[in-house]
Length: 107
Image (cartoon, rainbow, N blue to C red; front, side, top):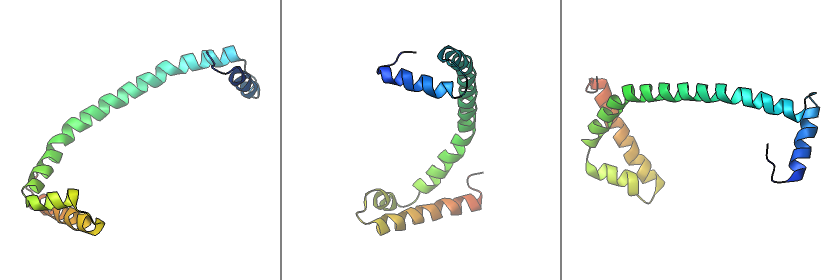
């Protein structure tokens, strides 16, 4: 391990000694755990990509249905000065999307 500050090494060694380990043992433990963690992260990323591929068409359909709403609503939702105005148009767009889902337009 490379330390920028020599005190960091001393502090780490002191903390590790509380658990009855040496710095070399700690490095070996870290080196053995890192590949397992990277493999787990790789699996999670692949799974997330698969889920996104399945969900993407539905989300796109929701966006398309709400895109059929008045363009003014989108503009006010994005650019209105007051929070209550943005909230009003966000809720209108949400109602359009909910109505489309309830009608089965997205299934």
